[in-house]
Image 1 (cartoon, helix red, strand yellow):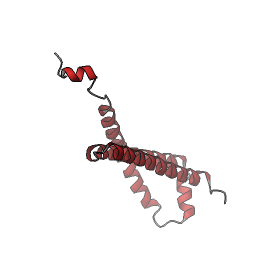
Image 2 (tube, rainbow, N blue to C red):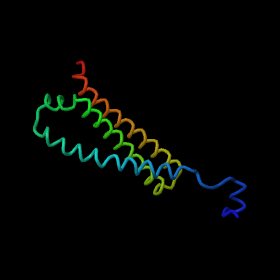
Image 3 (tube, rainbow, N blue to C red):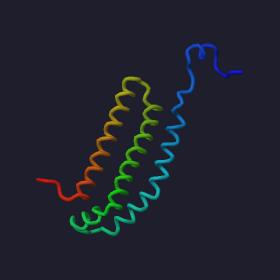
Length: 129
C-alpha cells in the first residue's frame, strides 16, 4: 500500500531525499561549534589587550590556527544551512529565492575564504607589501 496519490506516482513526486542530510549537517555543525566557541571565547581572554605581535604569536601555533580554521568553516557552513531554510520557507518567488540562495552561498564562501586566508597569513607571517 502506497501513501502517494496516483498522480504523484506517475510524476515521480515525493521525497527529495535531502532533508535528512541537511538536518544532520546543521546538527553536527552546531555540536562542533559548542566546544570551538567555548575555546575561542576563553582563548580571547588570554590575548585581551595584547599587541599585534602577541596575537600573531598566539595564532602562529599550528593547533590554534587549525582550531580557528575549523571554527570559521563550521560557523559559515552552519550559518548558510540556517539561512537556506529561512529563505526556502519565507521567500515564495522562485527567481528571488534562487538569487537569494546564490547570493547567500557566495557570501558564505567569500567570507569563509577571507577568514581562513587571514588565519594563514598570521600563521605564516606577514603578507608581502
